Image (cartoon, rainbow, N blue to C red; front, top):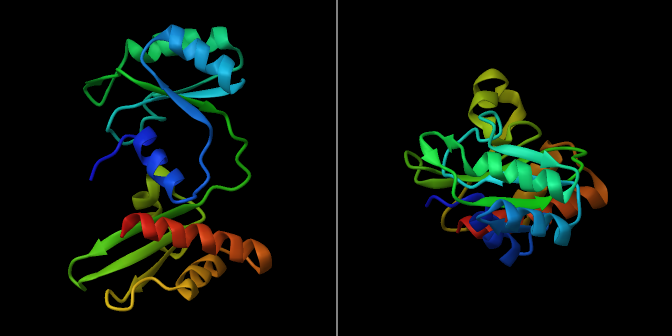
Length: 181
């Protein structure tokens, strides 16, 4: 299944996974209004189904609604990966303290799901797996028993979390897995 970022965030929100406040827009004027409504600073993200949007100039930041309007104009006149940008996600700019990657993949050979977590990666998780495989933690999940709470705690511990933070992250990991089911 291929989802745009705003569609994926709507699904995550339904499962109780926190996401930044945002709004999808289709014009510079709508971007300005969204920035005023959300509050600046904001991130403006081109909504096209291609990888590496940030590196390709598809993510811009604005400190004011006027800057958001200008940035939206640039994005809406751009092409990324051969696709014209028609929608932008305007969302609150988040100060990132620590970035984590959490994912679920299908291991067709083993006929099982694999929960994946890393303290690095994000959009470049494949590159991290090749360059620093020790930073990518994988956990095979028995398809009969399913993903259990202890699986989430194991991954959270492997990422270096302990105590209450580990339990909180384990909850987020469990909810991510439920999304993939």
